[in-house]
Amino acid sequence: MSLDDDRKTNAGQEPADLAEAALGITPEQSERYQKVIDGLLQGRYFSLDEEGKVSGWNADAEAQFGWPAHEILGEDFFEFLAPLEEGDDLRELILPILNGEDQQGTPGRQAKMATRRRDSSKMVTEVSLIPIRVGDGYRLNWLLKDIATHRGNPVEHHRMKKRHAEVLTLIIDALDGGEMPPPLDDDGWRPNGKRVEERWLPAGALVIFVADAQGAAAAKAAAASEGSGSPRMRAAALGELDDLREENQQLRKKLRDAQEQVEKLREELDDVRTGVVGRRAKASALADPSISPAHIQRALREDGFTLHCQPVLDLNSGEIAQHEVLLRMVAPDGALLLPHTFLGTARRAGLLAAIDQWVVRRAIRTIGEQAQVGRDVCLEVNLSAEALHDASLIPAIEGEVARTGIEPNRLVLEVPEQVAITDPDGARSLAKQLRAIGCSFGLDDFGSSFGSFRFLKDLPVDYLKLDGDLIVTLSESRTAQLVVKALVDVANGTGAETIAVFASDDDTLRLLRELGVGFAQGHRVGRPRPIGEALSEVDVQGLRPVETAEPVQRLAGASGTRKRAK
Image (cartoon, rainbow, N blue to C red; front, side):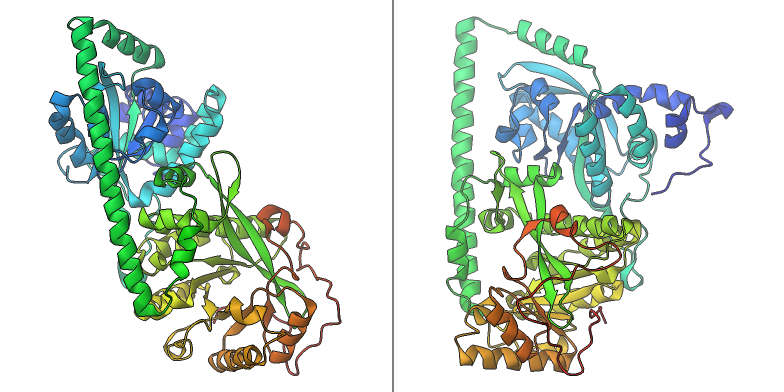
C-alpha cells in the first residue's frame, strides 16, 4: 500500500507535524487516535491468530494480565482471559474481527473488554482491535521489531511514525474508515493474470491497550480491592479454578499426544510408500524435546533464528561461486541449535512454511546488502515440502526481490529429491514459478532413490546436488564413481549443473573434477560459519579464489563462467 500524498483533510486543516504529514492524517484524527498509536509504540499490545489463540505476548501484556509468555503463547485467549460467565460475550465481540467475518461497518474496533487476570481478579481492559491479513504480516512484524528495539525512547517514537507510516495509516483506517486498504505486502502481484487472493485472508488481530500505564495500574488495584465474599470463599473459588485449569491442561496434553501419534503413523505410511523407511525416525531421535511450538513462534516473531553458510567451490575456475544458507535457532540459554533439533516440532505445529519464508526473505536481503558494498554473492536456500503448496511463498519472493533490487538469479531455491518424487506436480509448478521470476531451482540429495532419472525429463532444474552418501565413499568405491559419472551425464543432458557435498579431502576433489562434477561443497572447501563473517571474505567487485592442494585442471571445453538460471 502506498500513501496518498493528496489525502484529504477535514475543513482544510493541515497536518500538525511531519509525523502527521507522513501518516496523511488530520490533527483531528491525530488527537482521536493518539492514545492508540502511543500505546502501540510504547509496546502495550498483544496479538491473536484467526482462531483466537495468543500469537504474540510481551512484558506489558504480562504485567496487564499476569500470564507469562511461556504459559499463554499458543493457548486460547478466551479460556485464559475471559471471565467464566462472560466468555461467550467476549467471543462474539472478537472472533468476527479475527476471522474476517465482520463485514459490517468499521473493520477495526475500540472496546472495553471484561477480562480476567491470572489471579482470577476481574478487570476492564480498554483496547483497540486491528484486523491483520496475511499480506500485512511482514510490514507489521518489522514495526513490532522496531518497537522492541527502541521502546521508551520518545525521539524514536516520533521517527517510527515516519518509518512505519503505512502500517500506522492502516491502523487508523481500520478504526476510522469503512473499508480496509489493500494488504501492505500485496504489491499487486498477479501470477498467470490472477491476483493472489491469499494475501487478503484473515490472520488474526493486533490488540492495543488504549489506557496508559497509570490507568492499567489503577484498574489492577481496583480489581484487587473489589474481591467479593469472605477470604475463605474466595480461596475455595480459586482452588476450584486451579483444579479446572489443571484438568484442562491434562486434556490438552492428551490431545497433543494423540495428534502426534496420528502424525507419526501418517509419516510411517508415507515412508513405506516412498522408500525412505527409518530416515525420519533417526531424525526424530535427535530432536530437542525442550523446544516447543511456542519457542519457534517466538523465534519467528523476534528474529530468534540466525543464518550460517557454507561455501560452494567452482571446480573449473577454483573460485567460491556461491554459498549454501544454513539455519540455526537461538535456544533460550543462548546456544545455537541445529535444524534437526527443532524442524520436526515445527512441522507438527504447521510452522515450516513460515520458517521457509523467514529464511528466503533474509537471504534476499543479504544478497542486496552485499551488493550495496560491491560483493557479488549467490545464495542457495533449502525449502521444505510445504513450500510446494505455499501460495504466499512466490509473492513473498517477488516482493522482496522488487524491494531490494537484486538480480533474481543470485538466489537458488532447492527441495529434496524425495519431496519432488513424492509430489512431482507440486515440484514442477514451483520450479516453473521460480524460474519465471528469474531464480534458479535445484534438487538436493539427487541420486538417493531409483526414481532419480525417471522424472527429470519433465522437471525444469538448474542444479542437482548429489547425494552425500555417494561422495563420502567416492575415493574407495568404484561403484560410487560409476554412479556419480552417470548422474553427471544425466545432468549434462538436461542442461543442469552438478554440486557434490561432503567433499572432505583433496582426493575427493580430484575425483570430482575427473568425473565432470561442476561444483563441490564440504569441509575441505570450507566449514559452516556465521553468514556475515563468511561473506565478509568475498572480495569486493569479485569472488574470492580459494587455495587448493593442487593446480586446478579445467575440463576440456569447460567455461569458467557461473551457470545462471535458464
